[in-house]
Each structure stands twice: as structure tokens, then as C-alpha cells.
Image 1 (tube, rainbow, N blue to C red):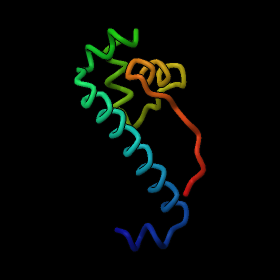
Image 2: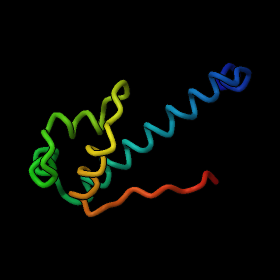
Image 3: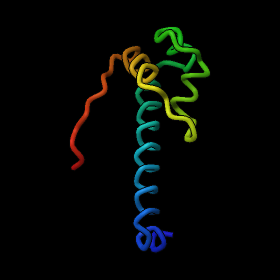
Length: 86
């Protein structure tokens, strides 16, 4: 599989983007669970519907809008920063 990805620049870019999104969502879930919160509890703190919390954390086919993401992060005491790729 890696050979196929490496041989196709478009596929390589898609794989990198997918990996980054997966890792971002994994970090969101980790931050919530480390805070000791369920999705329902986070929904109460953030003002977001519990289904919205679930979509932010799990749905690879739907990206959260910025307002939703900020509410999610604010409820956890986190912020979103823009940094250069290393």
C-alpha cells in the first residue's frame, strides 16, 4: 500500500490530509477523556448538541465548522493555534 501511495503524488497528498484529520480528531477525543468528560457532559458545557460532539470526534466525511470547533475547544479550556508545518 505504501508503495502505491509513494508512487502517486495525488494519493500521497490525500493520505497525508486523511492522516492529519484522523490525528486531530483523536487528539480531541483524548483531550475530552483526559478532562474526565463524556460527550454529553461536554455538550452541556459547550452548548453544542451531543450529536455535534460525536460528529466532531468521529465523522470523517463531515468537517466541523469553525464556530463549532471553537465552542468544543473553549469548553475544554483549549485554543486553536496556527503553526508552520515542521
